[in-house]
Image (cartoon, rainbow, N blue to C red; front, side):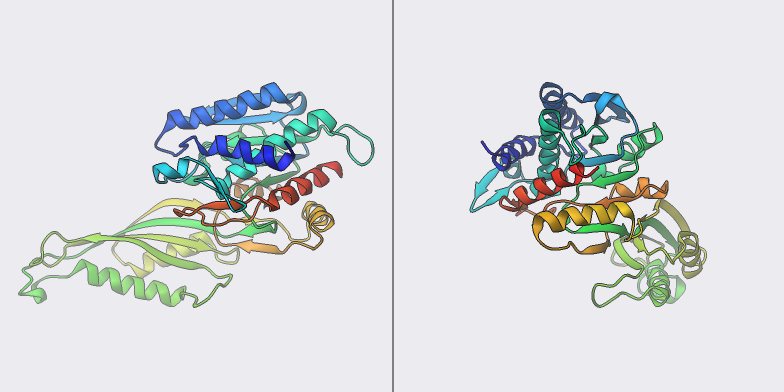
Amino acid sequence: MDIVGEIVELTKKLIEFESIAGKPQQLKAVVNFVEDYLTKNTSLKVTRLESKGKPSLIATFGGTKTPKVFFHDHLDVVPGKPEQFIPLVKDDRLYGRGASDTKTNGAALMMLARELGRQGINNKGQVISNVGFMFTTDEEIGGQNGVKYLLDNGYKCQFFVTCEPSRLNIVYAHKGIIWAKVKVKGVASHASRPWDGTNASLKAYEGLSRLYKIYPLPKKEAWRTTINVGYISGGDAFNRVMSECEVKLDIRFIEKDSPNDIISNIKKCFPGAQVEIVEKESGMDTPAGDKWVRQLAASVKRIAGKSPELKKGHGACDGRFYSAMGIPAVEFGTPAHGLHTDEEYVLIKPLETFYKILWDFVSCL
């Protein structure tokens, strides 16, 4: 079986694990599978760590905590229908939960680790031993007990590559994130006499209007700070003026907008409201001209025949933890199709190109 065939078969096995946040035994089982594969098929030292029920694996030559490059993949997925955990190959497509996000990338890294042990010689005739592999199980819920935990425990590098589905382009920066709960108080009254009360939902609407004036909603893709109202709740009867309204905000901010300024603006827009910051994370901010980015881009051009797009992303990834420490980090991976949907799949043919790019890159270290 060729490399692509082996990657597909490994991915199919990984998809069969329902490795969602709410099933800790499945998270452990998928990590057991990867650990067993790496232990049996590579010469790398495999270390297993766990934080708050979320297991992780690190595989490095000689057990070092500081290789030049760490390749990362997350083995957790979002929930899916039962049939999505039964992999299906059809018309050069591999369907299943995690096919794009990101078990195919993980399978490619497992194969790369194996082949490095068999024929890991770089283009200078030296044994490649300065690469490490990291597999975590909590990216879909924030990464605090995966990549962040491993970084805090000394696993550092000169360049961090998280294998997210980037369509063979390089994502070198992404927005930061703030999750905020805003509880607005009003005064209840009978619905037939609204002037006797203060409707909390109207106060919330006015606050949102003020906030959107500061951060207007773009009509098309733009590198700007954006606000999304993900949840609104309040009221308990048709005929009662609402006395309390809760709004949950998802804010994706760019580097020029300070998170503290954004939080201050939220409080100003909702005077008297209770504002709770649930999440506040910096973005990923690697310079596009960084030497490691250029080196990875050169590998893409050599193998794919054209230069990759160097992009800024709107969503968050685990690379932000390394970027925050001043360590260059990027997203790089296979083409994505149907992420988080019922029709998630990965194209099989491009997997050969992806794998060869990884091999070319490590051969130049």
